Length: 214
Image (cartoon, rainbow, N blue to C red; front, side):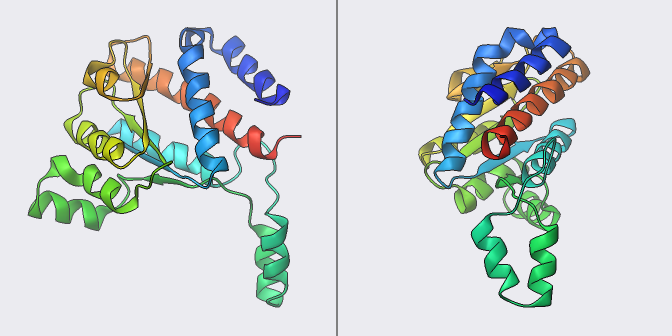
């Protein structure tokens, strides 16, 4: 981990002392994610309700710039400029990004799965289609017991993905079945979600700095 990344994480720990309790598991998750991205892997995320919104939030922080400037890959920028004025425009306006997909963002697919097969398989089917060995699966559940997230995690493990859970105090079944569980120190759904937002902001900021920080 870069010294600058460690400084960023210290800032989050000082600002939100309550997340220091998950420091070890949070930093382990950052390491897992960095290893995957560096090897060409991607992040698949899912959750229900507010946790689905959190998944969208994480995607937004990873796919485009979050806290620092992200220059476009120089080879891609040169290739775009070689394609003329439109390519130059793209090279000047696009940013570096990290690959992350919210499995809860595909309304047509989700309603088709819910109607034809069953809602509990909505996320698992997408892991079948998108997941590759070396990818990371992040399941978000305040209880740690969301069945559709658990089933997706089972498929992820079978396909060789690393499974990480962002859960509440006890971790639920996800703590037992996932490779790593980051357990927020709260029980009430809204309190867990508040802590989750602090945790994934720290994770996203660290990931960004590892790739684009100086």
